[in-house]
Image (cartoon, rainbow, N blue to C red; front, side, top):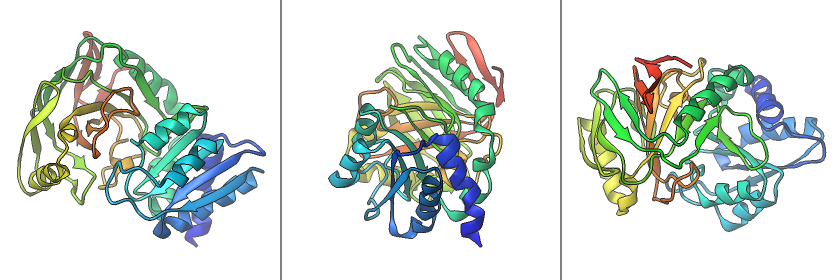
Length: 322
């Protein structure tokens, strides 16, 4: 029965998000336990008179690990690609190079059959696109960005020279977008972030998920230098320490969630898209306009944010003003 119910979500991915045209070659990168989702997307690709190719790889050992070279090469040769995976391959050279070659991609990380049926995938992506583009435009190149929350976050940074990324699940050649998160984001200029991050909503990685209590990160010169909190904060700290890569502490991204159908549930691309939330990405930033490749990319999500860019207020306590 779920294969039937997934058909609508698969059609959204193929027709709305990717805009697949007859004769195109669409690569679906997946893992063994995601095959039912991959097959539903392949069926929608075939129905669009395009050619689906399913590539099954071994699950990655960590988020941000590169896919096999054969898969990476196939991504570059495709007209479009979909990644239906458990561990993220979004922030990888493979995605960056595929987009540079003109392919377009949709990233379905941590996806389940139920997520194809209910939740963020039910949003009207065309309807939310103008707001997403407007927020991204305000973030782009901002000399001073400030983020505060009533939970204790107070973070400033510069986005000078950085592009704003409007990710609303509809892509053109050379672009990628996660789905169903709708977000406008920017990558802070390395070394400029200062202050405190208090994640009070979710860290949807390494088994942390929806937060039991706040995770507090102190930031100096663009890097996290201290992580405090309870059990979940300790999980994050131990995981980052185990990477033995100083770049995992880099403040890589500020993203604004703009999908009214998303809800906090412990899955990355649902939690990041919750309307009016903000997430701070740490680690790799090369696919967002930055210069650092790290061993991972995690997002720390918070609610009730107030966000300003060069004096203009974009959000006030979780209310989007654009």
